[in-house]
Amino acid sequence: MEVITIFKWLETFKVVYETKNFSKASEILFISQPTVSSQIKQLENEFGTQLFIRSGRKEVLVTPQAEILYERVVDLMDDWDNLYQAVQTNQQQIVRCVIGASHTFANYVLPALLIQLHQKFPQIRFSVQMMNSLEVLQAVEHHTVDIGFIEKPLSAPNIKRIPLMEDQLVLAGDTEKGPWLVRENTSGVYYYTKRFLEEKDIEGPVMEIQNNEVIVGLLKQGFGCSLISERAVEGISHQRLDESFKRNFYLIRRKTSVSDDIEKCAEYICEWSKQ
View: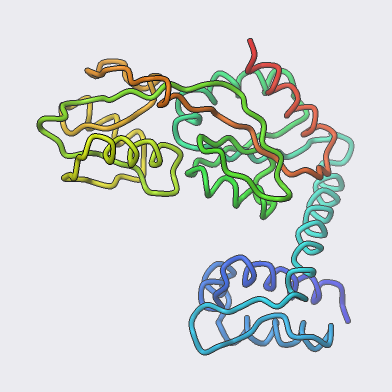
């Protein structure tokens, strides 16, 4: 069996495992659904075991054997990417580091940090992806992000979470006019917004907006009200909330790292946050 063929099957397996859906996997991989099914079947034949249980529903179930294989596959893909980068960059020793950041951190903290990281680690090529806190955690788990910044104390068995700095939430905008501008329920600030509305017995109207900057833009135009970071309220009428509405920003990364440079980078970020 050719190594390239096995790698193709393993890549397809990884995407099916993460999406739990053959159709979604085919869209992500730009191949037909029958091709996805065929590659998974050939991989199952190669290992002599069933990896997915097809129950007739769109979402498939994973077997214990698939759980074991997935853990090894993500490490294998990481090793391959690092080897590929090392060969491609020749003697330059360029390291890739993908940063995943939740919205408030990305907009109001990350720019200053990125400048410092670029100067401190010239051998690292940084790229940034903005997501909500849960998406950042999942991306770090799936090895598509190396270092994550979240606003919600999420955890996972293979993830190390380190508190960096505090963030005070405020009530911004006109609560008499509304509507309440709220983030999606997987974002860092949603928990505090839900708690505030329940404590104040407020029932709406509510408008869900999955982007902090859009919420800030609406508030600056005098539309709506929302709980947002104190870092974002310049030019917006607001009132400070009590200590229970103070949260942490966290750095998250995998407990097992494949790069000394990224380890040093994470250590530097922790020191930088204390300044």
